[in-house]
Image 1: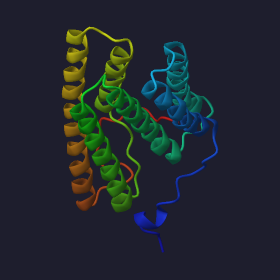
Image 2 (image 1 turned 90 degrees about the horizontal axis):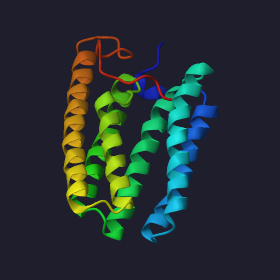
Image 3 (image 1 turned 45 degrees about the horizontal axis):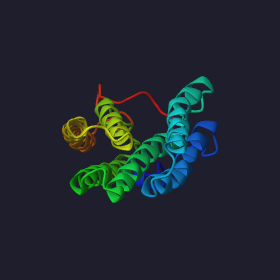
Image 4 (image 1 turned 60 degrees about the vertical axis):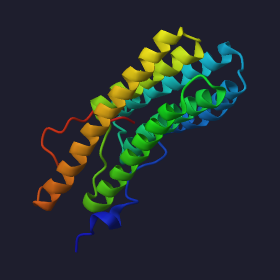
Length: 207
């Protein structure tokens, strides 16, 4: 007898792969980065850690494809590292006073809602959803905003970055909401849960 999607929750394939290790490295780097930003540490070391985090994000997906080690764990760890990392940096800059509290709140609510939605889809369908291109664009905009805050950009420039990021975050959240209800509706109609929405706007598999 075949198992239900919820029974396969832990069946995410191999965990200890090089791409997944790189994603976890990105999570570890968050700790010193947060501490340095909050305590207004040397910009040189902050940028070194940021470059390492960006490099790990760049290489994990490519190594996964080169080595044919794309895993369901990677689809979980990569966006989780992006969300936790981005949230931690924005939180540190908010504590420091460089970014407004409402911006951190908007980012946190969006990311938590997307994570919960992904968990519901996993339980209901057995599928792991990947990041959408609109989400990647929004995360990039948040990174640019954080960089502008770190470099003490002029107030008009920083304000533009904040509002542009907010608009992109809102747009990407709406796209995720549309996909969430489309997947649940499609699986309810009897479509294959592993391919719940034909032509869904997903990025290539990350490690």
